[in-house]
Amino acid sequence: MEVRLVSWRDHYVGLWVYDAHGRRTHDVDMRLLDDSSRLLRRYSVGWYYTGPEMAEFDKACPRITLDLFPDGRGLRTEERQGQVGGAYVTSPKLRDDERWMGRPAFGEWPLLSARVHGLIEPPVFEAAEVSEAAEPGDEDAPATCWRPPRPAQPGPINELFRPGVRVTDGYHPEMTVVEPRQVGTLRVPSGLLAISGPDIDHGDGPRITVPLPPGEYVLDEAQVRFSYHCEWRDAEVTTMQATAVRLLISEIPAATWEMALGPDDDPRLFIEKQIAGFDTDGATGCFADAGAWKPLIELFERGLIQGEPDLDGYEDIDDGSMFMQRTWDEASGGELMAFATTGDGTYPAWVGRSGAGDVVAVVVLLEGMPELLPERDGTSTDAAV
Image (cartoon, rainbow, N blue to C red):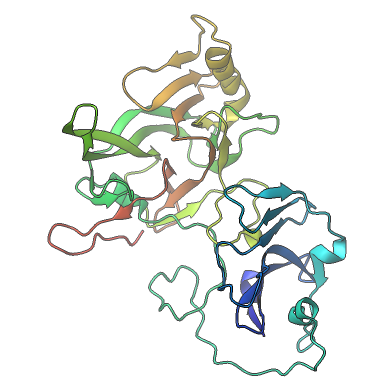
């Protein structure tokens, strides 16, 4: 059996292939690109069951995942039976016709299931009842509404800066949001904000830029307070932890949040819950004036990496804040503020906009979005945005 899930509006075609035992054997995510003429085999998973008794999606089932991009890049990940941890990752060696297929005319779709399972009898098509498709951004849509894959969503970012809100990170059962802590200001005279990992090679400039009115803006960090049992003290202790950093452009609350994209990020290619953002190998991110990016990042490298003493334009901050370094360019007045993340990897930046569409804040979450807990009166915290 083969199931097709199609949303041309979202450039998406999904294929689910099942075997004679009703188990899904292939899940293929294709994307409509090249001026609506070709479909890219963007992402696929194949399950290779070792016998009729093996359950669908059994963790011990050998599995091959292909993660492909239109420029020829890609990864082939093979997870073998009985393998404990890790996987065998290689670059896939695929022909062009294995990566792409022409968009079929209506009623002329080839059957992937025929190729996979070697069907010799003519296929029989049956019409299935189709649930109403959920509209983009419709968080309250019934679970029966199908929707195409979508990138990671911001969650209730506003609540992280609202004192008294109760959250959990999955490890600590209850954490309470406290007043945001202002750690300084950032001057962006060029009107173009840079968001990047200052420890990454920047031959092409900052990873992400966001236009905003030229000015000086408050930098603050969202914090939570929580208690836990400290083993070496053998006592209950209370501590504070930062959950996000924010450049506050306006006091107007954000009505919506969107993920900031770099110049090479194509929303048509995003798979389910995928993020885009800046990369770091040194657990560090930064906000900076993109107009003075080169001199600012050079000062950062000279001060932090080369350790030049008494360097003008560089300050190593040691006041208990998670912000570590600040640099400033005397010629332009632009500044850079570097902050600690919770590890290496990719961190998305979220742009908050007012109801009129103006940028009011830019936020980087440090450990993902915590889950909101009910308010003390038993009602749910408002998590509209």
